[in-house]
Amino acid sequence: MPLPAGGVGVPPTLTYHARMNPPTHLDPHGHAHGHDHDHSHLGEMDVRVRALQTLLVQKGYIDPAALDRIIELYEKEVGPHNGARVVARAWDDPAYRDWLLTDATAAIADMGYSGRQGEHMVVVPNTPDEHNLVVCTLCSCYPWPVLGLPPVWYKSAPYRSKAVIDPRGVLADFGVSLPDSQRIRVWDSTAEVRYLVLPERPAGTQGWSREQLAELVTRDSMIGTGLALTPQQAAQASRVAATSSAKTGTPQQPAGGAA
Amino acid sequence: MNGVHDMGGMQGYGPVQREVNEPIFHAAWERQAMGLTVLMGGSGPWNIDQARSARESLPPSLYLSSSYYQIWIEALERLMLARGLVSAHELHTGAMSAPALPVRVIAADQVDAAMARGTSAERPVRAPARFEVGQRVRARQMHPTGHTRLPRYVRGHIGTVQAVRGVHVLPDRHTAHPPTSEAEQGEWLYTVVFDARDLWGAQADPTVRVSVDAWESYLEPVVTA
Image 1 (cartoon, helix red, strand yellow):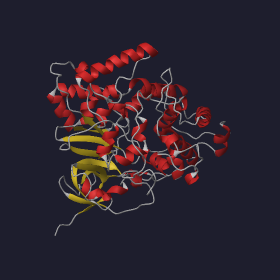
Image 2 (cartoon, each protein chain N blue to C red):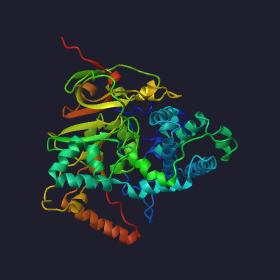
Image 3 (tube, chains in turn purple, cyan):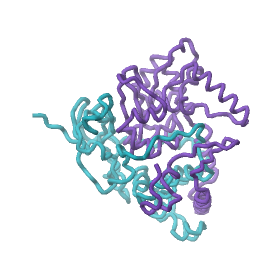
């Protein structure tokens, strides 16, 4: 919702809407290109951050190769495909599921995922009676080792404000409607405990391999703003992705929002 | 601090807006903002609670009109200045004009191990836990002017201890600078769950429960008659 122009001392171009809401249009190359974005301001951030980086390297505080590596790590390697593998194994192996629900940090480390923003993990299972939703109302706490860096909406005011007072409304924003009888349990990550939702295993997946199961596990289903894909949804999503990457020549994100 | 960052339960921000096939970063500078912030934090001049405190202490209008990585950069510059690591002149010119201070520089071949290790919030147990699972507790009605992690929307309300999470460093003290031995001490941490009707009133959805993770000093026992 845009603020009134000129309100609270903010230049009219820097409305709340323009800054905190993500661009929603993609140009023909698949790049985000929002009409709301103030390009001169983004240019200003480019200049400002480049100058800061130059200064910190000059002063010897930052190793430029370390900067390249950390960006590569969180842009290319750590992401929701990690969490999807954890969920798929829990669906497939009841003993692993028990371990995950009693000592998530250790069970997740067993898959090779550990560390920053996942030091103290707790996994909460969805059931037909109860659906879990994770939020950080105070900042942007998110389980990095299993989900990577959070999407813009997770850090945005609409999600942080609404999740604890109107979780069914948030789910509606995501196109998710739960039965009225299914309780909702919201976890506000106010300390260093990081929560991961274990979504319900979709019907019709008996005998599937863990690799096949992992394809059904979306990022949003592990936050609680989505459900795991049904086999039909996954088949449709992979057809769309194949068409789209044939057009753009770039692979799609493996685990985006639920359809 | 009753800051603009404490958003739980606020209204009027509109629907949650998703972005289809959202990229990890929306601009080149966001990559640098993430990398510089995480590396400098890992170098040790400040801890995570001091970083959070710097972000939530930004002027409210700036906080609300900034993207999250802009908030990180604003706070990073302020922390670098506050620790004397850079001068205002250097930030303005982008060129070094004052000697560097010693910091623990993270080398490229240390990044993976440092990230995989993380930083534990756990601290040694010094006293038995005051509360137990199933106990009714009240979130204190408190309004500290410094950093705290007890959101306003639960203060004064009664909930139930659902889990005892161990002894974790207390953010309210952990922001002390320069660091003190007391600032590093831990406190028992609990997951406390509230009925939505207790938080938001009789019209709230009766099927919703909301929890926060709360340190022992955020809570008081509920005396039953």
